[in-house]
Length: 272
Length: 271
Image 1: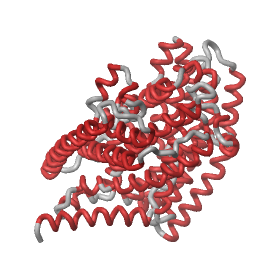
Image 2: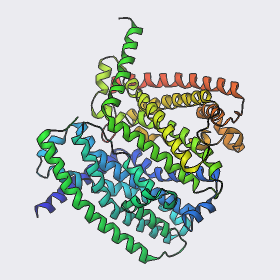
Image 3: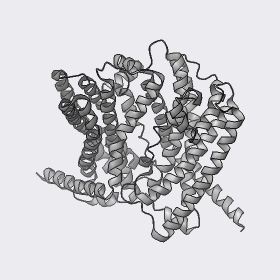
Image 4: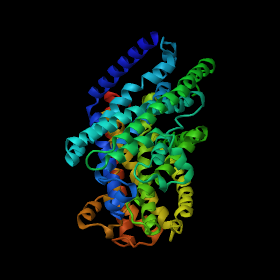
């Protein structure tokens, strides 16, 4: 019962803080909207300067390459936001010198780190993916909008295991006398997820690694949805199931992991 | 102590600080190199997905060095501008002003970090890619010209970064998010495509972007592709751009520091 109250308190506080911050920094909110398009334009410019869209469509196995690249760029930007935000938050708190106060508060570090990240990551994912909605509607009409919402739902499902991975990785910066040394995580996840190419381009070991990365399944869903008309829904349900299983599994490891980091930090102090 | 001696001491202190940080944060340093290498692979594979089967070895050379130059530019900007967050969080910005040291120069010292990261990441990934694709990307025609082009590229990116740092301090937006132009630079900045190969419209835009000339010199060294205006003219134009950019950046820094001395730093919240 008390746990629910903590969740409610932390989520409410984070929601208020994040909305206030966005309201005070409207230009930043606008830039967040622009980034998926910049990324899509970059990869389209890079690829079409030296190749063609039809080759891309046949190699990656998508029906509509432009729709896919825009959608995948939304997934890419939101995944980077989720992982980076989760991994950097603890470091920011360390730099600002407020970690001792958070630890002394009733919910403690582990709850603030886990629950506190839900709202900002959900909002930033929603911004990144709703940004690509206009293109989806232009290309496919209302069906395109539904597809974007499906991907957003799957991104939310993938966010839960991603937060688990990123928080544990980020919390290591409290133990080691280091800055963030885990920022390779988001590009690594994107590399193995095959966001702009088929996974078969990768060496075998990275192909195996891709199966345990949640982003791979969201990218796969984006590929499935990038066919004209109604996509096969059974595959999407299967992907949703995998992401739910990952959410449970990864957070079963992450929560106790974070608790032991907190214990260590209480005992030895924060390494700076 | 004379002005020049004091400036030299400050410059040595800034270089020392960044070298000590590199030494101390070894894992972070390794992380930067790995991150760099991952982005090189990710973008190169992305580009290869557009190219027809069988043309990989030819296209890979063009794509690889284009991406390397783009990444060098991008890294320099992100490592310098991204450090504003750290400097503000540790509240050392005002400290440096109080000690009569320009904090923008402190931040621009990150160029040391970015250059070392690039110098280590590029050869490793080039060799790895050579063995993966078999494309002759490691056979450089003139290493001196390549180094000159890349040095100019880093200098332009560093000067541009300092302008972004000044802007981010006024606008309260993380400077890296202000860098909306970096994606377009691959094509219109001549980093990925030689001037001679561009369509006339894009070429007209590329003439006004300094990176174009640095990339033309670097490409002459890498693949022996003759610069559009000839090597000597390209070099002269690149020096003029360097002087102009240096002057503009100096003026922007002076204006920003004067403003901050009066009104304080605007970078608050999640910089």
